[in-house]
Image (cartoon, rainbow, N blue to C red; front, side, top):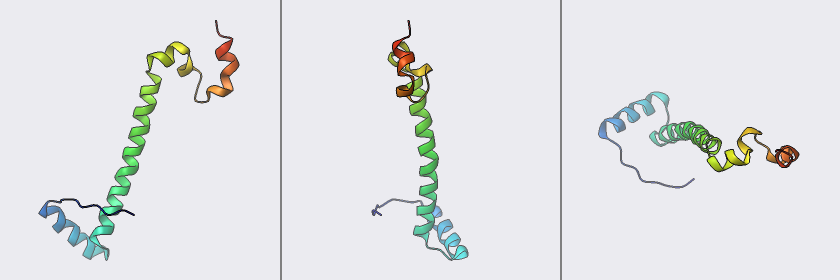
Length: 83
């Protein structure tokens, strides 16, 4: 784990403090849990964006790589024998 300093609004800190008391957890743990969950969501979004960029890449389209699936090595004969 790495240490980071962040700035939070006073209202956010109050809510986290109340929640921490009710759940018998530390504010830090709640913040870590929320950030980890959001990181997972953003990771999925990032993968979708990258996949869309690859799919829409004009050079890869011209080469025929976007039509043949994920594993180009499995389709190498189809790529080279294509007219």
